[in-house]
Image 1 (cartoon, rainbow, N blue to C red):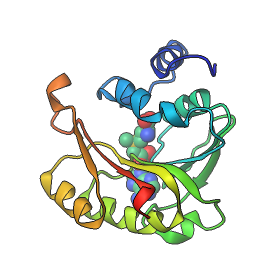
Image 2 (cartoon, protein in one colour; image 1 turned 180 degrees about the horizontal axis):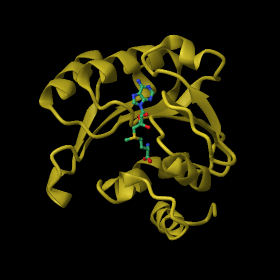
Image 3 (cartoon, helix red, strand yellow; image 1 turned 30 degrees about the vertical axis):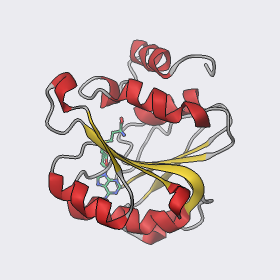
Length: 178
Ligand SMILES: C[S@@+](CC[C@H](N)C(=O)[O-])C[C@H]1O[C@@H](n2cnc3c(N)ncnc32)[C@H](O)[C@@H]1O
């Protein structure tokens, strides 16, 4: 699978009934393809908070051949995604992440609530390696943008015109300025 583009990997998973809304309700597949390509063949640690049934973990597993992939969710996952690690816990609680190795790429697809997004970043930022990425999906309000930009140099990726969704917006912080 490792030679497939993220789009082809997504389509392949959809054909197996493994569907993340990153490529259906949201327009994120091409965005992630462009953002993540430089990291693809690196032995990095990718952490996604908020994994639901694991479809996005399967997408990352297929895309990053050398990466360690960890998913965190507050709800147990009875069918863990093969080749990934799953931690059950609240992303607002630092104890959830104790015991994990340092992280290169974080994807926050959990609560989408401003105060939680801010709190999760405060928990995870100290666990990140330099040269990585911190991505927050589904930014619904400008208050979240302002609060996150007050903490770090977050880029805003506004894709709302593509599908007409009011929350098709992402924040990205590059952990160079750790
Ligand atoms: C939008 S779904 C994730 C979808 C998944 N990333 C995908 O692309 O298929 C959001 C998930 O966040 C989880 N969640 C909500 N609050 C959380 C919290 N405080 N800590 C960890 N996970 C949480 C929910 O249980 C749910 O499974």
